[in-house]
Amino acid sequence: MGSYIPSTPAQRQEMLQAIGLSSFRELYGDVPAEMYLDRPLALPSGMSELEAGRAVRAMAAKNRVYDVILRGAGAYDHYIPSIVKYIPAKEEFLTAYTPYQAEMSQGLLQSIFEYQTMICMLTGMDVSNASVYDGATAAAEAAAMCRDRKRRVTLVSATTHPDVINTIRTYCYGTGDELRIVPEKDGKTDPDALREMLTADTASFYVQQPNFHGLFEDAEALGAAVHEAGAMYIMGCNPIALAIMKTPRDCGADIAVGEGQPLGLPLAAGGPYLGYMATTEKHMRKLPGRIVGETTDDEGRRAYVLSLQAREQHIRREKAGSNICSNEALCALTAGLYMAAMGPDGMAQAAKQSMAKAHYLADALCAIDGVKLRYSGAFFHEFVTDMPKTEEVLSALSRAGILGGLSVEGGILWCATEKVTKAALDKTAAIVKEVLAK
Image (spheres, one colour):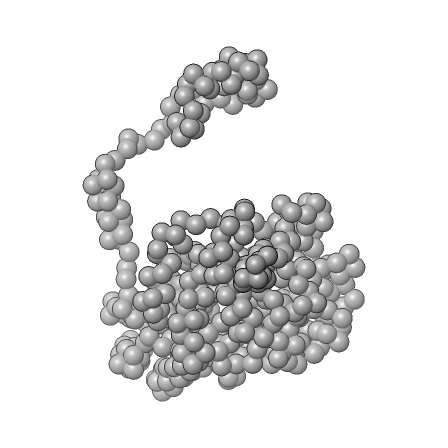
């Protein structure tokens, strides 16, 4: 038993005697003897604080930190105001856990409520939950929301991020449901293929906006086709793009989800991030996780409560719509602070600058012999170029302190955010030109 247990050896022995045992080993009498570990674990000896700090710094020194990042593919290098980093680092937020006596933690509930409110404003939806683990989980949870006894098939566009597709596939495998991929055409969802695949057993269709190639999908037309077939429409949206594009609600979506990392969370080697989820009032009771609401106490003062918790800890397991448990409260607090600090105008400026710089980079690259855009559709801040020598190009950029785009089959998926300077974009194009000229 761990020494953290706040009891003395004598007290522990007294408790054992009360239940008719003489040792803790007797608690495991039904466990086969060969399962016991009767030798010390092969763990290294402990370190002093000084030694541990030195070891961690040595590991950190192996990281490559790039001055310029031109890679996105689901995680994006946006500017984060200093206040967004400072407030979540305060110990009352940093060490807080999900409150089980929720109404005792009014500050934490208020931060979640404000986050939910801003997500609803961003998506046009009626209600948001307190966030889930990441954008891929949010997409899978949304697909699970839509299924019923007669409709067990989830359709997902082939233009979706591969990690999101795999996460939804994993969820479907666990529940015995079916995932079908809707083909793409010219970098976007093939609408004719979608109409053919919308059958009576289809529960929902998921599309990413902008999609994995960076292109804007014809979201309204896709949604109309889905609803005509009696299925539900899920949109996975980049939250920065939502500052300037039509909301999922305006496009007819029943559920809006996405990766919240662009909302003030650093790249952080892949996490922790958060997945936002929002829906219409009609589907509110199927939304997984927690929903914080505003009310008044018995003295008429504003107060916050946990209004709804549709998860297995509160509902009979077989009736629970989700087994998701913890929420990403600290990440949600950070996202809420980012949206509050930037405001609608600031977020729109970040989106417009990202889009403008991506188009500038695309024009500069496509002016080089051997480089061309793979798709002709409108795009946000990512795009794919076909080009030879992709690995040589990315290696040359890396040597110059530039993290180039993501290597895809026969080309590169590029990304630009508001943080990238014109000088850095010009330097990138010059390096690509030099490599391809050899």
